[in-house]
Image (tube, helix red, strand yellow):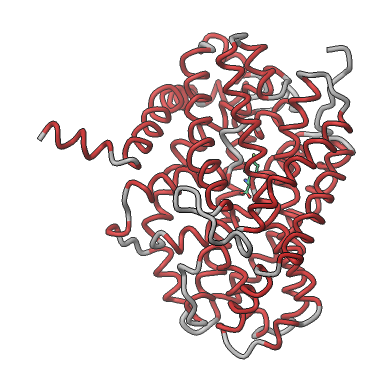
Length: 461
Ligand code: PFF
C-alpha cells in the first residue's frame, strides 16, 4: 500500500468508536424484545454466559487480527495466511455487514421518526398502553413513513463514512455515548419507581428454565455476537486502525463491559415499564416503541426526555451503522483500490436498496414469507444466528489453530506487556477458550438448534 493508513487519534478513540459500534439498537431495541420473546431471565442468563466465555475471547482474537494486519477482513486473512479459503471467510463477514445494515437502518428509521413524534407531543394523546401499540402499528404500516426514515438514516450514515474514519466517527462517539448512558440511568430510576416494577425485575432476573430450548440458545448466542458487533469483521476493521502500543486485551474487556451494562440498563428500564403498564413482553420488534412512550407521558418533563431518548438511540444506531458500512468500504478501498467516496456511495445505495423489502415486511410484504418468516426476519436470522456465529467460529479456529500461538502471543503482548508479566495464567485461559471452548460450544449450539444433538444422544441411549 502506498498511502499511509489512518489511525485512531488516541486509545480512547478506539474504545469509544468500538463501543459505539457495539452499543446500538442491539442493546436497546433488540435485546429487550428477544429477551421478552424467549421467556426473560433464563435467556438473559444464557446470553451473559455466551458473552463471557465466547464473546470476549473471540473479540480479543478479532481485534488482534485487525491490529496485526492493518487491513480489512479479507485483506487481513490474506496478509496473515494468504489462502483463498480464509479470504472467502473474510468475504462472508463483508456480506453479513451488508445484510445487517439493510434491516438495521429500517429500525433506526423508526427511532428517527419517533424523535419527531416525541417532539410533537403525539404520545400525550394516548389514553392507554394499547394506544401506543396501535400508533406504532399505524406508523410502520405506512409505506411512505417507513421508507422515508429508512432513507434519511441511510443518508446520514453515508455522510459520516464518506468523511473518513477519524474525523467522522471518533468525534461523534466521544460526546454522545456518555450522554446516552446517563439518560438510560435516569430511565432505570423512573422504571423502578413505577408500581409493579418488581414483576419486571423478576421477569428479567428469575429464570424459568422450561422456556429454554435449542433454538433459544442459538438466539442467545447469535445475539451475543450481534451486540458485540462480532463475527463479521467490524471489530477487525476498527482494530486495523489501532496502534500497536495499545492493549487489545483491556480494550476488548472494556467494550464488553460497557456493552453489557447498557443492555442490562435498557432491560431494566423497559421491563419494569412493560409490567407496570400491563403490556405484553412478547410484543416483538415493536416492544420499546409500544412501551416507552407510555412511560414518558407519565413522567415530569416526559416530552423532553422522550425526544432526547430517541435522538440518542438514533445516534447510537448511527455509530453502529457506520461500522457496518465501514467494513464494506474498507474492503473495496483496501483490496480493490477503490476511491473511498465511490465505495461509500455505491455500496450505500446497494445496501439501502436491500433494506427496502425489509421495510415493506411491516406493510405491503407482511404476507410474503421465506422459510416461514418475513424478509426482515429472514435477514436478521441469517445474519445474527448463522453468519455471525459462523464467522466467530472461524475467527476462533484461525487464531487458535491456523495462525499459530507462537505468532499470536507476541502480537497480543504488544501494548499489554505489564498484563502479560502480571497474569500469565489469564493468557493461558484465553488460549484455551479461543482454541477449544469457543469453537466447540458454537458447534454444539448449532447442532442443538437443528435438533441433531438430541438425535445423537438417543443413539447412545
Ligand atoms: N452491535 C450493534 C448493536 O448492538 O446494535 C449491531 C452491529 C453493528 C452488529 C456492527 C454487527 C456489526 F458489525
